[in-house]
Each structure stands twice: as C-alpha cells, then as structure tokens.
Image (cartoon, rainbow, N blue to C red; front, side, top):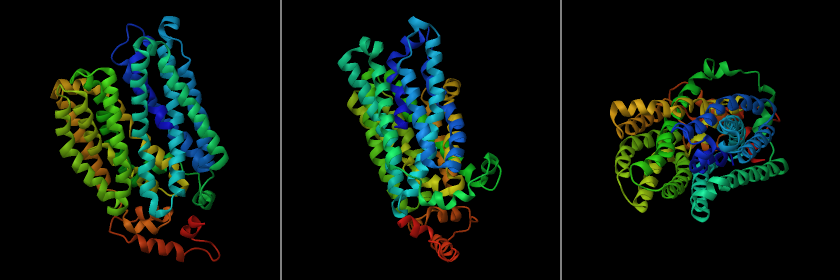
Amino acid sequence: MDNLHMFLPLTALAPAIAALAGPGASVMTGPAVVIAMMLGRPLGALVFGRISDRLGRTRATRVAIIGTACCALLIAVIPTYHRIGALAVSAVLLARFLGGIFIAGEYSAAIPLAMEWSPPRRRGWMSGFILSMAPWAQGTIAFATAGLLTLMGTDAYVRYGWRLLFLIGMVCSLGMLTYYTLHVSDSPAFHRRSCRASRTGLSALLTGRHAPIFWRAFTLMTGLWLMTDVTVLILPSRLVTDTGLTQSQSAFTMGVASVAQALFMALTGHLSSLTGRRRLLVGWAVLAAIASPVLWLVIVRPQQVGPAACLAAALQVVSVAAYGPIAAYLSELFPTEVRSRGYGTAYSFSLVLPALYPFYLGPLESAVGHQGAPLLLLILAALLVGVGAGLGPRLSREDWDCDIDDVATAGRAPSRPHDETEVCGAAANTAKPGTPTGRTEMTR
C-alpha cells in the first residue's frame, strides 16, 4: 500500500500534469511532485520511527495509514488549474509532502515489525517478498494507467480518470487499516526490549554508538536510491524521447520491467540467506557496474515496445533487484530499541541527494553527454552499494538460528570475523533464570 501511494503520481499523474499545473507547466513540474514526497520522508522517518520505538510498531503503522489515505483523497478531489489556478499544483505538492511523511511512517514501523515476527531462517525470504512489493506496485500502476488511457482515451483520463486511481488507493489503505487493527500486534522482541526503548536520540545514530553502522547503511542506500532514480524515474521519459515509444507504450514497458524486478527481488532476498547478506550485495554491485551501463546504451536506441520491455526488465533485474535483502539487512543492523529509527532514517535520509537529480542531471548531461550522465550515475550508484555493503558486518548463514537482537549485537562487534552461532549461544547463556531466550520466545 505504501508503495502504491508512493508511485501513483509518477505514472498516473504524468498524462494529466498539464491540467493541474496549467499550460505554462515546466518540465520540472512532474519531478517536483516526486521530490516533494521524497523530501517529506526523512521527517516522517524521524517522527514515526520514534513513535514506533517508544509506543509500538502497530500503533505507529495505524496512524501512518490513516494519514496516507487522507493525502490520497486530497489529491483525488483537487480542482484543476482552470478552476483555482496555480493553487492546484501547490495543493498537489503539499499533499505529496505530507504523504511522504506518512508513507515513511508506514515502512519505518511495519517493515521492522515484519522482520521481528519472521522466523530467523525466513527473514531473507520475507525481506525479498516485502521489498518486491515496490515493483509490484509500480507494475500495477503502470498497467492500470496504460489500460485507462486505452479504454477511456486521453481526454477523459485527463479530466477524471487519474482521480479513480487515487480513490482506489485510499480505499485499499482503509482495508489495510482494518486488517492491522483486528489482526496485527507488536512482536515479542519489542515487548522484551520496550523497557529500554528509549530515550536514544538522533545523535546516537548520526554521531553516537550506532553511527558506524548507520553511515555504512546510508552509503549503501544512497547507491540503491540513485540506481532507482535512473532505472525507474529517468528511464520512462527516455523511452518516449529516445526510443520513440508512446506514453502508453512506455507505461507498459515499465510494467513488464517491474514484474521481472519483483520476481528477482524476492529471489535475491532468499539468496542472501544462502550466501550471506554482505556477499550478495557486493556481488550484485559488481554485476550492476558491469551490466547496467551496457543495457542502458542498448535500450535507449529507437526500437519496438517488445524489445524495449525485455531490455528494461533486464536493466532493473541487474540493478535494483539488489533491494531484496534490504529489509532484513537493515533490521538486523539495529537493536529493537532503535530499530525503527535506524531503519527509517537510513532508508529515508539517503534518498534526499538522489531525489534532487532533476537539478544536477542537466548540468551533468552538458558535461558528459545526454547518455553519459545516466551511465555515470549508474556506475557511481553501484560503487556506493559495493562500498556500503563491503564495510558492513558479515551477516551470514549462521544468523538463521539467531534472534534478531543477537544478530544486531553481532553486527556491532569489532570488524574481525565473528561467529554468530557463538553470539546466539552467549545470549542464551546470559539470560536470567526463568527468562526465555530470544529464539524460544520467537518460536512461542
């Protein structure tokens, strides 16, 4: 649900942006809508991360869902430029900024909650499935937009068709709110550590005891977000301008690519449990650095929609499919008392610089060429992923049998190779008499 709301404006609003912004809309209007949401997310991670760590994951998630649904409704009922002038696009930008706050609140609470509930040996699988919801959301929106444009025609879609998608998103969020209220509770790990939760502030993440882990995760996520900008945000417009595809064909192409990305993202989550999270991420960074520039140069040539869809799918697989283990990896880096704040800030603060690509892409193109700019960004992104993951802890197969807090303890150990199995055993041996260990409690 949070990914549906996150990606709706990127695809669904694109054909109707002139109706909202007016005939004088600049090429920056569309990217500005995306940037407004992304700038709200760091604030949302701070606010809801603290609520989640102090008051509970489920409580924070429910509040965030309500806010996200309200923002979707607001966009759905905003009048066009012809009725209220420039206030229309201003209202969209405000709604997207607020939506970014609530969207960040959803994943800052809900994803760590899912990782805390997941059996240790299935955290990789669960991570891959959860993160694959982003490309499934992209694909759903792309196919829905292409379908409505075909069935309704461009004029009807611009008048009211795009509003239907935001209303559907709102209804889906209310359905998820009902499910969370009736069926979801905080994990044993949260209740076990809630007495320590904290008074730890942002400084502990940025400069304190959690800072080394945070900045490695920040570097890794900056690379992944930069890769996402090129392959998910920049590519759709290049499919129209460089390959000659229509708007609906571009949406279809990105839908096919999203399906391929989703399938491989689930796979990489599981593979990280076989190879180790760090080894998989570093290996995928090397693959992205070699293969993604080549695929980019091939895809931006004039061609038909079929080959373009296959090439876009391959590009997203070799690059952003690396997100698969991220939910597990980031959750395993931080202890329960700061897990939501650590996860949310590492995931959200890192997207700010990549999100500003509309401002530096033009000067970069002037310096290195129209195709050279995205190629350079892809290589830089792969380098950041490799460095961030390479400096991180070795979380490997032995962690399957560990409670998530034992894994976090192992990740903060000195950089020498450690035996996670020993850490699990130590945690069990130091438990107070009569107190169940983390593994037993998770099993219960």
